Image (cartoon, rainbow, N blue to C red):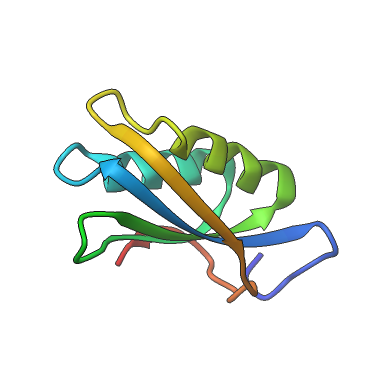
Length: 96
């Protein structure tokens, strides 16, 4: 669905803080996003947080963000900053 955006398409930029690097957070996020049909990217930030851009069906994006509040079992999420952004037309979800 690259390039196809309906009124129900949602795009969010998320910053996850806590013990989120070195605990498979990025790989687990990719797996979860792909299973939900969400496109975008995830990356480690220099300050120790994990950032992601998620876009797709609003309910699927919301479900991914809910999952990010806890992350994979070794992670400890202290806070989640979520901001709306513009869809960029990604066709898959990957690590940046």
